[in-house]
Image 1 (cartoon, rainbow, N blue to C red):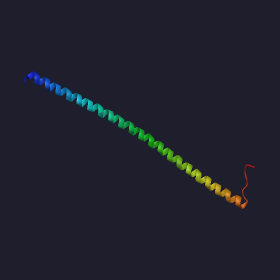
Image 2 (cartoon, one colour; image 1 turned 120 degrees about the horizontal axis):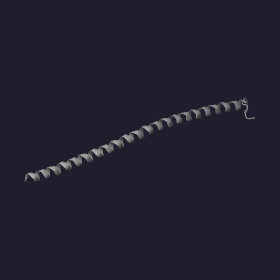
Image 3 (spheres, helix red, strand yellow; image 1 turned 60 degrees about the horizontal axis):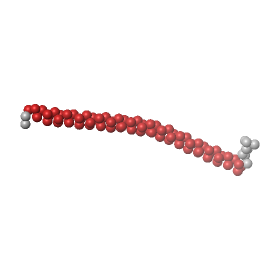
Image 4 (cartoon, rainbow, N blue to C red; image 1 turned 120 degrees about the vertical axis):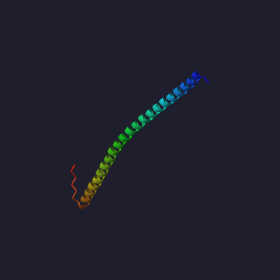
Length: 87
């Protein structure tokens, strides 16, 4: 093998290796951007879940309060103490 042929083979291998490294780095960067975007979406969804959980607890307490008020009103009606405020 001549010296010039060795240089061509070496240059071809080197350029192939550089292209492979560039492609691998591009894929790595793409995956990293995707991971960061998903992480941001997860954080937003966690915030929404926290808000909805709080809303559910508020509704539950309102339902319990309404049930308690209804029981008091029923007991007052049974005892004849209930006065209808609408009339």
